[in-house]
Image 1 (cartoon, helix red, strand yellow):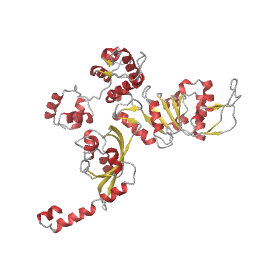
Image 2 (cartoon, helix red, strand yellow):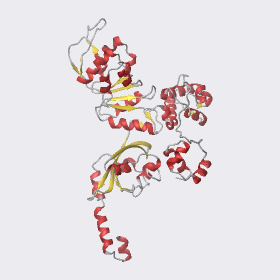
Image 3 (cartoon, helix red, strand yellow):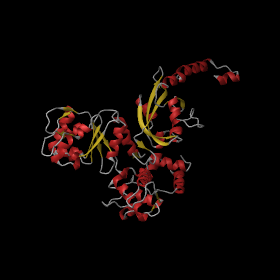
Image 4 (cartoon, helix red, strand yellow):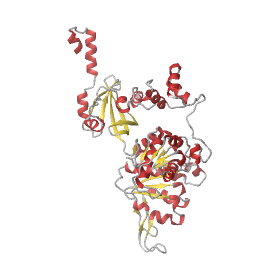
Length: 470
């Protein structure tokens, strides 16, 4: 309308009606932002074309960068440094999904922030006009503290899709009281996930009690688990609280729950169902207050069908199962994990007697061998390989020669090679020049091109963007 006034050309009647209608339908951004100011979480308003219309103070404080304006820019430019929406870059786009669902959508993304890449839990809610058409979206962003998307000397580290899916599930269930069952191969970091779950829960200020179920003999299980009274058996000179009692108000993590003896499973089931227990030799029913997290690498449901694990206990502990990915499905995380582990090893010193805070680095060739290995022992095996390599390195530089022979060959001890995404027409990974030439003559879709090279669409997008071809 302002441009019309400047040119002194009055709008026609139909144009004026359209302008008035558009102004009536547009959201009152000022009023909306004043409402969002009351929310302590970062929030911003987007139009249906992904442009940022406004943001509250919490967003500006946590995600704003001095000298880098964001109003009028698209969310995918600011948060991801993409030049296309997330779904076109091979990721989940919450706006597209919210539009399809006609309701809110939530997803965990990696965002660029003033502190570097971070996991951010994004919830997008549509705003409708009187005709039920979407006129804007409100995006709420919560930084995930349970994992790091950059090298870190402690905690969970990763940014691959498989890892992010597990972290997203963890963030969903953490505020609740539901029992959680962590499933995955040996060495996938179940205790680290259990710790992150505890720290993200309302019970974070209370104890996290870790129980290695495979390390307690059947004869000692009940007394260790429930405690005992003085005189309950020979040698019980004083009352001793059990692990359940120690976890009061906090989280009880039962690692390798598949190893709990059948005779104890019924007592564990009773504890979960009634919330009470008795010490060995005691008569008083004591109240239990803990959040149960269990973990196993065993097929519990198959064991239940075979009578080796109680089926009723299985359904009690698996209210919210989370599948932890093996390292071979997190190939893109290996460089990040290596950097983090070398920090940890250097900070702690090693078996050679070196002082803490030594710096270790790895050569590109050695890192490539690690990325091409199948890792049947998962993260635990990777850590062991790096600790050995640090011991063999005399100058802090880890080379191919410092790696075990099977890792150098890229062959797992089981004889298998890492499984890479392939298709019936998969081709060898091309150089940048080859890729650029191929793209110019390829007539298919982006998805078909990614499939041709055995890549994800996200990987293809990043390669093309690096060549200026996205």
